Image 1 (cartoon, rainbow, N blue to C red):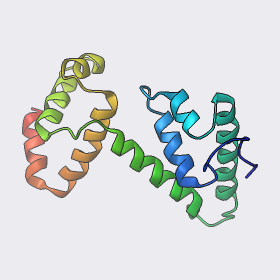
Image 2 (cartoon, rainbow, N blue to C red; image 1 turned 30 degrees about the horizontal axis):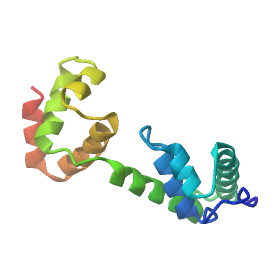
Image 3 (cartoon, helix red, strand yellow; image 1 turned 180 degrees about the vertical axis):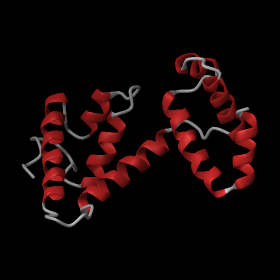
Length: 150
């Protein structure tokens, strides 16, 4: 990887980079403060991001014919996902998830449903992922969901 921008702090580690990338993906994040905490500005972040993206691509290209996810890519993806999950304000109860899903099934547009329930898209998508996985493991929960969607 090219050297990090001058003054950048601790961003030569994939977990630090992935954490910062996930934090910056939050639309409500104070980008300037996050970047400053790492000795970066927007131009420095762009250079750093470009360098890391190139490194991740190179790691993926080095696989040759094998269909294996390189450890560097796995580390980035796992860290990014972990930070995104932790960023969700709260875990949505199954009942609130059902309420949102019913609203969407009735044809109400997503923005209206989310606004009415005081949810962010991230909250809903996180809950959808969580509860879908739970329903695949729990037939009673799946039956409850199916009844609620009728």
